[in-house]
Amino acid sequence: MKSIISLSGMFILVLMLSSATSFAADVDDRLNRLDDSVKKQEQTIEQQQATINDLKADLERQKGQGSTQLPAPGPQTTKASGLFGGSALTNPNISVVLDMFEYGSNLKNDELANQGIAGFTTEGLEQQKGFNLRAAEVFIFAPVDPYFNFYTNIPFTEEGAELEEAYVVTTALPEGFQGKGGKFKSNFSRLNAQHPHAWDFWDIALPHRAFLGGEGMGGEKGVQLTWLPAMSFYTQIGAEVLQGENPLLFGPDAKEGPHAYTLFVKSSVDTSDYSTFYFGPSAVFGKTKTQSVIPDAEVVGKSALYGLEAVWKWKPASREALTIQSEYLVLVQRGDSTDLATAAADSLLRKQDGFYVQAIYRKNRWGIGVRYDVLALLYDTFEQGGVQQGTGGKPHRETVSLEYNPSEFSQMRLQYNHDRTDMTTRRTNNEVILQFEFSIGAHAAHAF
Picture 1 (cartoon, one colour):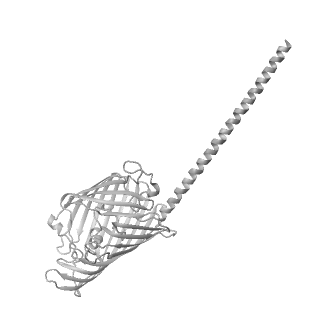
Picture 2 (picture 1 turned 135 degrees about the vertical axis):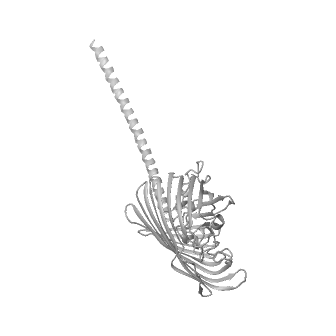
């Protein structure tokens, strides 16, 4: 019996030792597998950290290439989806903005068409009483490769399609430089660089209409170079060489080849935790040949338009903001004016200015705006043959607007203009505009 117990005890002891050995081997195997898993996770973390560092470097490089017109995602984010998903390199972002309005005035349509500003422009107003379609604008953006982004804007109107902008922007120039080439809206002026649907009011300010036309300079063919130096506050310095096709300030026939040039500086500083001040001078100058200044006469000479812009933005909350914006323009034009009927020529000298100030307060989905713009504020020299020509006073206008934004893709605006720009007949143009804007698709952010 004792031998049986002894044999049983030895069997149990051997079994226990075998189980312990097996358990130890299992634990060791598990430890080895856990160690391998940790090493793999460390490798994954290192790879992710390297990716984060690369993205940060790309972001810093993009900041160094910044401009006043904020670009859509650059080529370093080629995995970003386009209109239908997939790579943006082969599938560009496309958006459409519909801009339509109902227009009312105490003047008749033929009077509106002849509603120029004496001493400034003979161009009348294009809108007619009733419903109007300003445009359905198609915007396309895509990176070309790691070095260029491509943008285009094609407004469709009832008269057909127009290529307003088509240009490329560099993304990889060193030391804060950035180039642009093609057809684009000049950065001469903040308001000039914006498309109509981005304006805070239905129409452009009087100084721009008087010196550049109803939509500013429009798209100009040329090249632009900007520089963003390393400074404690944002400062961009830029220059442009343009074809000079604007019919009011220059004219396509003023000279063969490029004959308009711009210089500008854009700066901004934070004035508080919730506000920013943006400002800068600019100038555009070149050869002029136009029939849009004096009725039945052609002006040939040189023109220079100088500007100073300032914007203050206060945004204490995501759904509340106040923007105060102003620009001052001075035109200096020298040359000759030739009567188209008699071919008689006189020397021409113009030194005229214009100014506007506007404020927009938005809260939740509503916005209210006021604007005052005036011409001949400080200067009103208009001499033909050395004789001052009377322009009849200071053309001016007061504007109020009320807007409602159901979402970021739609807007309705009611605007009233008390327009006193007709210094010849002294008739006031009381304008009432009900504007509708709708957008679809992926649209790049507007400038600050």
